[in-house]
Amino acid sequence: MALTPQWLDELRMRTTLSAVISRTVRLTKAGREFKACCPFHNEKTPSFYVNDEKGFYHCFGCEAHGDAIRWLTDQRGMPFMDAVKELAAEAGMEVPAPDPRAAERAEKRASLHDVTAAAQQWFVDKLASSEGAEARSYLKRRGFSDAVVREFGFGFAPAERQALAAALPFEESMLVESGMRIEVEGKDPYDRFRNRLMLPIQDTRGRVIAFGGRILDADAHGPKYLNSPDTPLFDKGRTLYNLHRAAPAARQSGRIVVVEGYMDAIALANAGIAEAVAPLGTALTENQIELLWRQVECPLLCFDGDNAGRRAAMRAITRALPLLGQNRSFAIVQMPKGLDPDDLIKNQGVEAFELLLAQPTKLIDFLWEFELQAKPLNTPEEKAGLKSRLLEHTSKIEDSLVRALYRREYNQRFDELVFGKRDRSNASFGKVIESGDRFQQKKAFDEVHWKARADHLYRRLGAAIVMGMILHPKYIRIYGSEFEGQRLKAYDPRIDILLESAEYDRDFSQEYLADVLVKRGRRMPETFEWDDLNFPFTMWPQDDEEAHQSFRKAVTLYTRMPLVDDALRKATAEAGKDLTDGNWGEQQRLLAYAMQLREELLTMMAA
Image 1 (tube, rainbow, N blue to C red):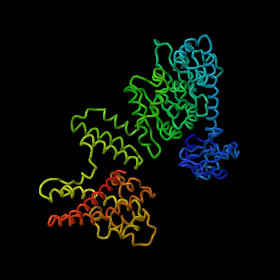
Image 2 (image 1 turned 180 degrees about the horizontal axis):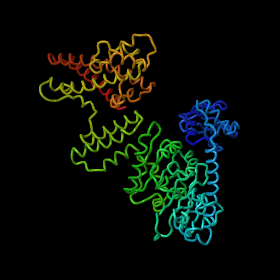
Image 3 (image 1 turned 120 degrees about the vertical axis):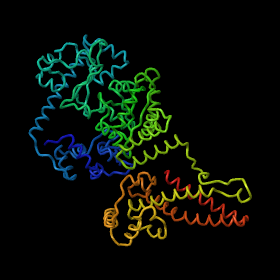
Image 4 (image 1 turned 90 degrees about the horizontal axis):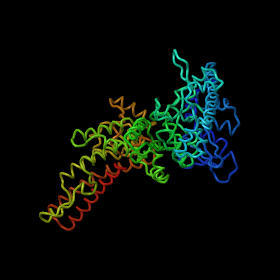
């Protein structure tokens, strides 16, 4: 069968792993995961966990690990194709028909694995020979232990152009296709890697699929590091160096560290930090980012502490922004200027590096700091440029809730930077001014300022309530009667249609509501219309208890605030005519209550 990696990934995405496993194992909910006693070994305390978001199970006792296909083959003993067919039928996917060409390609890949495996053994043997003395000396200077040299499979490629071809019993075409040799028209083929310290690049199953080579002669021509080209075995945009070792370690530690190059990853392993991976000569790709999120929710990007390192981090973040979502983010470990992880560990010890890992910069903060330092902020135009760059970043985030939260956070930071920190105390609405006659000394607020501020907040609250009823139609039926005589129509003329629709006995869904609005010459709102309203029930379109509670509170505030304001105006007028202790006390009580309601509203908008 022609089962491509893309097709198998789609099958895994459409399969709910916990549903498959729960047919034979009793699972218990544990946060965002499920747990059980491991079915692969005897135990009394559950150490077997199932994570639907990441699509794998893992036992911390016996290290059993896999996806839905692996579960059916290992736990139920099904042949691979039978497992695939069963999952595909449940997922509504059609298994691809047999493809002779695909079978031929698979056979070729298997043959190419033989080539890379043989090349790896030859490089290792050469490192141990007299020819590898300089490479061994380099590894010793780097401080790599013998165990790390063996574990990571270091080798050596001699300087001769035809050495590898003469040593390996494979056809020239296979050596070229595997990336081991270079074929140039009109010239004899020659070995790609010459006089280099060699390092195997492995897939998630630990098979050698490509190589990286570091130059040993500082005066020699060519790049310092040279990687294999893309081949039928190796796609550098879909491969993370050291992932097959780092993934089990990441499941234990709950973190994964992304460094700039494979020598950095090995240096960390040499220092006891096993959960480090590296891209292969390019910025992180979308596929590599998804690989990282399958391991942990917030990978750590650790790049060198110079401008090039910061730019590398920004390239990775730019790729990640459209993909951000709940439990899918990054944090940035900022190295001291001029140091890479290996330098820091050698100079200050692994404890210094662990301290950096424990205090990473959040992605939202790194973006802010990067743009804040990118250009001067001396003129209004330059300050406007800062806000424009920040909003350009947030516009790339496809998740509407995450995008709204980023936009709101950057708007608040920008306002505080440019206009000063906003005072959210009760003084925002007015305070007692101790001057003038007895009434002026005890008057609690500036009426002009109070009215402007109150009207602004009340309009935003009204607009949010209308949007909340459109996003959550069931609220219309529950709370519609609360708005008779209210002024919501001034904020959104759709309110009349919403309230009228609630009178009919039918399945009151968004689809029905959209149909009613269209028939009445209106439309459903676009995402941007509620992005900046900053209320939980508009920022979180899913209908859950948190959204419902916040909407209920919004309705209470909306109906109560005008009543309290009217009573306050009357009490203030009465105190102006005849300022007795009773009038003064009532006016102050209503003033405190009015300010409390507005403070609750501000808190709600900031939640």
